[in-house]
Image (cartoon, rainbow, N blue to C red; front, top):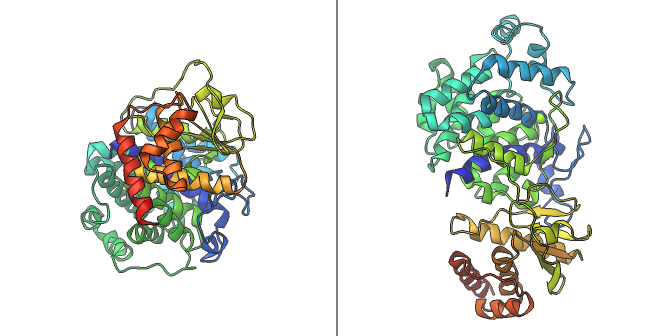
Length: 465
Ligand SMILES: [Mg+2]
């Protein structure tokens, strides 16, 4: 898998976890699975909003707000500038964000400068090992990963210390940075736990070793505002889940501080499973503002762009330009096809499935985005394709008109239309291709990796009856 998929997966995964867990914050164990016993792929998904602060579906909370402050400071300052980052935190706290951790609030409202505020708070209270610095550190873990273990764990401690004077909090951030670093390199973060523990300062090592041990299991319903159980739960969920979605389900079902624990688990799982492993119904709706920092609404595309900048890539904006509209045209019963602008200017009641980058977001209420590249670099093509087809089936079952599109409406759109016929109608790839070609003259067949994916899908569909 390309590193950029993992970097985007980490950043988007953390925001997705935050938004997904938020409505269940401080609830009892098992509430998520009780409400969603099976994947909710129709118009109403597990991104249900609500909760104590009555959030919109997909809206992230203070965890991601602060993470975005970390991310933008690192990108705009070209590295770690603690005074700048602290100033951004202050502006945010002064704007009265709907939620803010008690310890973070106490430090940011103390009026003390960046290099003494947190230490002074810790000296006075002796209590400063909350999970409020761990929840926001994924962007920094992406930013410093390429510079190696020393540098990334050092940055973790310094950023944590801006609000959390207890070094124990910084050690937890250091462990997370190291696990994310290993995952971005394509390694197994679970196998790296022992070596990550070696980097933990001696007096804190034992407590982290306990919650990161393979046989440790969280007790549902126990308080988890502290840094140790938060990290422990995230790693436990990664150990016991076999997909991004399952990791998040496990961790949110623990109840308690669900947005924060899921933000940490989501960052880690996103680095492991990559962008393509995050269900599109979740990634497509994640959004939010950062109080004190303008009216900008951050969305999926912004997070992906930020991840590329943190990972060292170019932070290019995407302007698809003006292209002649193609479609929408009904190609299969209830399923329409188009190109980018054909879809952008289509009727608002379409449930739109986008398979390419968009530039400006669409205004359709029901809009899912799967970023399938028209190349052979899709590490998770089978997983992404199944995710798209499952959502399409659920939306069709609810009676929605579907509009599938990509930039040109040719290759990716053609893949999904043909895959639908293979899976839902039991057609052979050849028959499906002929069927679509007859009804959609824009079909493009140049991508051999798509052809291979279709035949794998046909094999699986046949063997599952
Ligand atoms: Mg929160």
